[in-house]
Structures are given as C-alpha cells and as structure tokens.
Length: 209
Image (tube, rainbow, N blue to C red; front, side, top):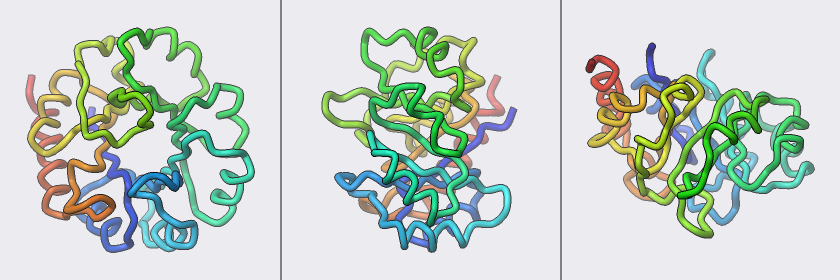
C-alpha cells in the first residue's frame, strides 16, 4: 500500500504548489494562533484554491470553539478536520466534515482504547508528547509502541524528516505520514528540496521488506 504524505504548516501558496508538484497527497493549514505556522483565514482560502483535484486540504484546530471552526469551514475549502487538542468524540463529529484525531504519545496512553473511543475518526494521527505543547515539537517517539493491528488507521507524525522517515515507514507501515518542521527552511516556510527528499525517502521505506 502506498503511504500517503501530508505536508503540514503550509503558510504560502508557493509552498503548497511546491509540495503538490513533488507528490504530496495532503496539505495542512494550522488554525492555532500560538503556532509559528498559524495561517489567517484569508490566506488559507487562497492556498486552498490553488490546489488541484484529489489533494486533501486539512484544517488543524487545537481546542477551538465551534464558532471558530464554522467560520473557517465557511470560508476555506477544508476537506478534513484535524483535532489536535483535548476534544472529545462527541465534539469532533459536529462540524460537517470528516475528521482525524491527533493523539500525543504519553507513556500511559492505551492506543487500543483510544481507537475504540474515536471510532468516528477517519484515522488517528500519532505525535510525540511534550507537556504543554500540542504538537510541532520536532521530537520522535518509540514507534514500537504502535500495535500493528492499528497501522492502517495511523498517520505517523512527530519529528519526521528526510533522514528518518524511510525507517519509520518500514517499521510502522502507517497509512500516512505527516511532516512540518522536518521540511522547513524556517518555521512556516517550506523547503521544496527537503519535501522532495522526504517523499523519496517515504517511497524507499515502502519498498523495503
């Protein structure tokens, strides 16, 4: 199975176009003001409009209220919502879009229980855990903690870059991988060559037995 690739934290049209050109399946738009990759709604709408068919636009929210989500979804062509805070299952289902749930890999997390809890999600995005930081830490976690039975629902994130993603794909066999800082020139500004190297490494990882 081909591993899907999401390039997250896009803040410029040219970065979205560059990601698509080298094979990205999805781009992520961060609607979380404290993040250095936060994007305003008008810019996000411009980015979404430049994307071709079959490239998924993902809107990332962290404990946002329903009015904020509705405002974004009303103005931006969002295909999929990514909940990256402490949102409960009942809250995630009420926004008129399919969704995925991000989980930070605390030491005591029970992935089987969380997968059962979030059965309405299209998938689970697994990120590294750092207290007080909802994501974008640039840190990896122990991939062996992911049960193989869940691999088909998993989008793997957390500290991935062109140098480690092939091993991650070989070991986990996730449905998809998500990268932000690992393909940047600086926070919020992507590097097309790093994106290309990242996707090439994903393909190498797929081919390994």
